[in-house]
Image (cartoon, rainbow, N blue to C red):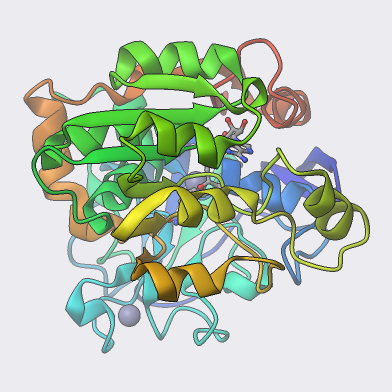
Amino acid sequence: MLAMEYRGPLRVRLEQKPMPVIQHPLDAIVRVTRSCICGSDLHLYNGEVPDTRVGMTFGHEFCGIVEEIGPEVQNLSVGDHVLVPFNIACGRCHFCKQGLFGNCHEANAQATAVGGIFGYSHTAGGYDGGQAEYVRVPYADVGPTVIPSWMDPDDAVLLTDVVPTGYQAAEMGGIQPGDTVVVFGAGPVGIMAARCAWFFGAGRVIVIDHLDYRLEFVRDYAPAEVYNFNEMDDPVVFLKKATDSLGADVCIDAVGGDASGNRLHAVFGKKLKLEAGSPIALHWAINSVKKGGVVSIVGVYGPTGNMVPIGNVVNKGITIRSNQASVKRLLPRLIEHVEAGRLNPKAIITHRAPLEDVSDLYHIFSSKLDGCIKPVLVPRH
Ligand SMILES: NC(=O)c1ccc[n+]([C@@H]2O[C@H](COP(=O)([O-])OP(=O)(O)OC[C@H]3O[C@@H](n4cnc5c(N)ncnc54)[C@H](O)[C@@H]3O)[C@@H](O)[C@H]2O)c1
Ligand SMILES: [Zn+2]
Ligand SMILES: [Zn+2]
């Protein structure tokens, strides 16, 4: 079969790989109908995630047709069109039982570090992902969810990650009616966080980025007030002034460790690798939230960052909440939002290409070219 393969930092290409096979009675094999490239894939692509092995197929956002099921799979049938959450979860461990599907203790040998994730390095279990014609799906009774007949598969594929992640970012913010919410990052995750903040009763939603085309999109989509941090002397001072000098009630970090906007971190983290990337968006979030406020982090970070103002967290009484999204827990209510027309996920898709174009699409998405917000790969079969 054809599959995307990692060849080292900034190098991915299409290769022939062996067809995946059932390895466990609870596995399924899924024929991929759509798969996305995610901001999280860029951390792998940039070579920033430990134990990302040459030969791995990325792709944790996909949907497809069930081609084969293991003898113990009960909830799926061959021919079902399913969306597959990015978390690989056993459904019965201590954490899964609490709905913490992103923290499953069984699906990854390194489970104390992170749960299992499709196509996300051997640190996240070493499972090949869905930027391929076919993919092996473990614990097939748990994650895969049949796409309702009324739902557009373009909406379905976005329910595997960015919609639930944006929603959970807003949920973890503990937004109270009338709250001012600042979202750092106008990528797919930040866009969804800004949209979902209104569901929790936000009174004002502000989005910060430096890419005008994304800011213009989220201004209308969320809707939100938008500001370009390159046009500010200091984003923290700007945000304080914009929020009665008190700060925002909730700040959401939807950027993670690849943040732009600070030369020191760019040199320390990106060039010299003396920290895992640049935690500047988190720094801004901590310093621009109100005393007693909440910082909700869904941006992905490597293990260490320097100069994160941890003292300010204590002295300001800030609550920090963070996690990988628990996609399965959130799916029922997100499907309802899509059905009711309150959420239109597919509006963020800007690029669609056959699997053969995977390296071009990585380049376009990673360099933020051609107005790219969310790219989708469609295998030809
Ligand atoms: N926790 C989870 O479950 C989960 C799931 C999916 C994605 N993520 C993470 O969420 C983050 C966003 O994902 P995405 O797909 O939207 O990525 P993306 O790369 O498309 O978007 C990131 C955006 O942040 C902007 N940005 C850069 N520096 C900034 C700064 N200092 N302040 C404000 N904005 C800045 C970029 O211009 C870009 O528009 C990534 O770190 C990704 O790994 C986490
Ligand atoms: Zn993703
Ligand atoms: Zn589990």
